[in-house]
Image (cartoon, rainbow, N blue to C red; front, side):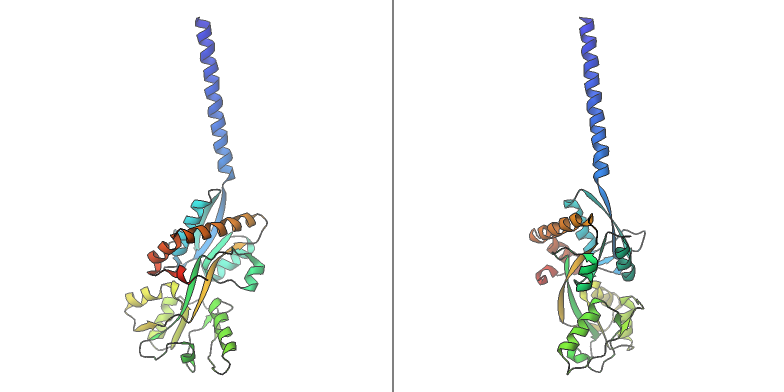
Length: 274
């Protein structure tokens, strides 16, 4: 009888050990299956996204990325803030798998990167000028000094396209790669160095205006563009792009994007998504 009990204990012990090993092995396999995705977010575009390297990014896009990651457990999203030029360069070289920063879809970007069909947000382009400027729309910029815009960037392309459609209304748009932070640009409009600044309203301009008590107003949107997630083009990242596209559609449908928009921008930008 004692021998039977001893044998039973040994059999049970081996079974338990086997289960433990199986669970441990399963855990290791699961951990190995989770792929780390490096993401570059805008570093100085509060409330869209901000946070220098070494500081956890905050804002609308980081919150949306977290919501996407919750629906794609096979990935671990790791975000860091980066300057605009460093984002696209790092994405092209493969340093980053993903970049977000209020990016527009453009033919050159579609060739270079994978871009999910579903937008992550909407960019409302507005004109910022002194309250006594009389500037309310693009045609009011004739003869005005406009803050230089990033060469090849979305605002430069918008302004160039607008000029082509309105050849009889000449505005002077100059390109620059100086990368001067937009809070400083707003101050340059305030002190008269420039007459106007054209930017997406999601960069947190109104917060700067309120905090710095600047005598500056924002126009109604002069253009509206969807914004997208850019993904490093590779065979491995196609599944990542498809997953993000599906997640973004679900997050818009269930109202998550609208809630995050209200949280960070004080308005529902998803209503403007085309």
